[in-house]
Image: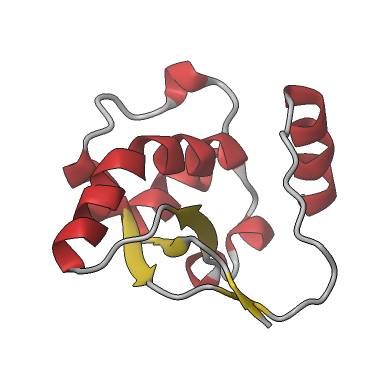
Length: 124
């Protein structure tokens, strides 16, 4: 087991996000939406103030990633996408310790638009 030099933020959609997605999906697609969480690795932090700073630094990228899962047309995204709106649309939970229980080496991959389309198709 290894401890990663990262912390994590988990986000889950709140009702305003669920409502925004309604035009893009059928009723079956909406079932369980609020139960799904996405996990994002962030730089380490030592206290709650630093955790909030990490959120301030990364909420825009997280917001864009979550919106892009539902709608690729950025003109349909809410504007402006402020931290206040992000916190209204998503519940946020911080994880200060991330452990890797696998023995295989950890790899990262850059996801280009083509691969994103493939992944999106596999999820839907």
